[in-house]
Length: 224
Figure 1 (cartoon, rainbow, N blue to C red):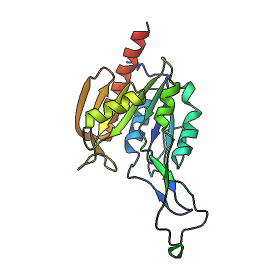
Figure 2: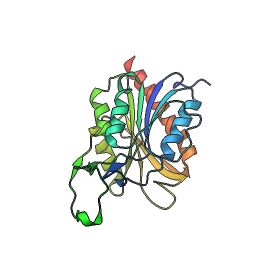
Figure 3: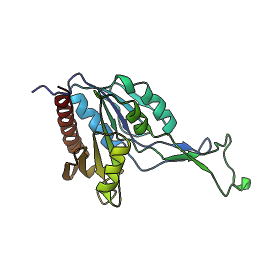
Figure 4: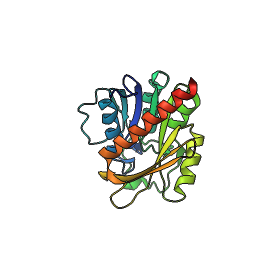
């Protein structure tokens, strides 16, 4: 059966960002990019045209033709902006750093420099930037890694960033960053919440893309 995503243009972000302190040191997180890459491959299986903006990961890019690799949040935003207006769907699965060092040290920071404090400034919010320019014909999915008040915090994030739905997960044993498995819930704008048990990220990618298909069908039916 032909997927409704056949021929659709999809932007997806994946993996961590790196915020450099000096030429050899940076701040990052434990995101492996496995979930984002699995979603990208499942979308390609359904004949979508995928544009993957990836942080630094160790995952093979084989079978994903359109990959742009970046480091920082600013670089990821710049790469995404080239696709915002032309895509049908955007999926923000990357773990983007909220802050970056105010000052980048051109030379390696030495112990003798006695740098004991460091100022940080807020990074641009990539999903919010898309939410501001998103048209009624475009669909967007976000991700929320939460540790407390998961549904409440994810719902707030969904509204603030103009998502059509948001995937919720949390760090824990065998789930979240770095693992091959995860446990998720998907919250839609109509407050419908679906929960999926612990399973491989490859299998969850199928579930998530099914949710994207359903959201696309619902969005298009509302426009008729």
